[in-house]
Amino acid sequence: MQEKIRAIVEKAVWAPSGDNSQPWEFSFVDESTLQVHLIPHKDNKILNYKLSGTYVAHGALIENIVLLAGKEGLTASVMLLPVSDDPLITAQITFKESASSSNLPDPLAEAIPARHTNRKQYEPKQLSEEARASITKAAAAASDEITFHVLEDKKRIKKAAYAESLIQKIALETPTLHSIFFSNILWKEKDNTGEKQGLSLKSMELPPPVEKLFPLLSHWPVTKAFNKIGFSAMASKTNGDLFASSPAIGLVCVRKEEPVQYLEAGRVFERVWLAATAQGVSFQPISGLLFVARRLAAGETDALDSKHFDEISLAANDIAQAFSLTNGEIPLMMCRMGYSAAATSRSKRAAPVFRTSHA
Ligand SMILES: Cc1cc2nc3c(=O)[nH]c(=O)nc-3n(C[C@H](O)[C@H](O)[C@H](O)COP(=O)(O)O)c2cc1C
Image 1 (tube, rainbow, N blue to C red):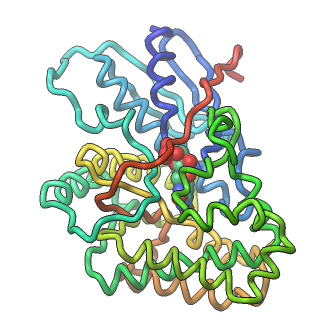
Image 2 (image 1 turned 180 degrees about the vertical axis):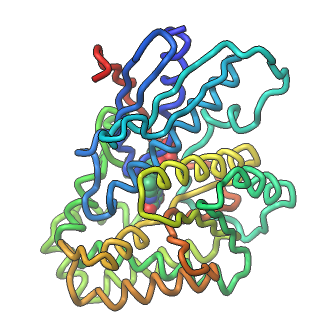
């Protein structure tokens, strides 16, 4: 059984994670029980309020494990946060040979190897009826606590898109965020092996003149000088235009700032992403502004500049209005969806680490 579970985990780690940080390790409790461990130092401290992005990545990973187990004729019973005083053990998963096996392949499980982030321009073409239906169905498994919304109305898309794109301006105007952003770039495609955290430059799909400028912009004084002639505002506007041209924007919300809800939300986010992939729909998470806004609302202002506080709050309000969120819905993960050319580059993965003792 352990060999089968290891093979499942090797495929499941193709789950998404912020900056491809792959913040996970694994251990076996016994022959058929796996524990999943969260590695907190992989967290991006500013963009990842309360480790929520890291828990979302774990939710996606856990969803992949369950789907892949089904594909292998196993059932996987998941206990989230099984150790009450250790929130870094995100799941304990027990596998059993399944008594009833369905011969029908699950399209979500089949889509796991193909799922990836596509940051290209999307075509101005509505989602097909079939894509819309399967994305909605994939999210329907969400509990009352986790909600999923999709915008297809142009005006609302625009409002959410330009609000989210403010993060680009803030990242370029704030030294700590600027430094985090540029230190997470894998400049050469040969470094995109999965061993190093970060995004390959090619996967960012930058227009050629901007890609050429990027090494220069990694120096804070250069960016600062460029900002004086409107660079940060222009970069943010360009991203806003890109997001606004997408035919659909989705949003997963939680009701409480709690690890268990982040994990459940991550599972829903992954199901939606896999359903989109199975339908040939390109997908990009666009959530940076939401993370910063939640941090600011909680009074955690470290590394942020007070000149941005009002802009961040207004942008978060715009997103809540665009989606007509009800009281108590906390926007966690936003994404854009649409049809596009293939991504230029995909992030690779390191082999999963299995601890020798499960402690
Ligand atoms: C919590 C979370 C937040 C993310 N935020 C963004 C984002 O704001 N912009 C973006 O382009 N990609 C974002 N991503 C996508 C990751 O960068 C991507 O999943 C990772 O680099 C692995 O690449 P892949 O999805 O192509 O396999 C996010 C992923 C997660 C799980």
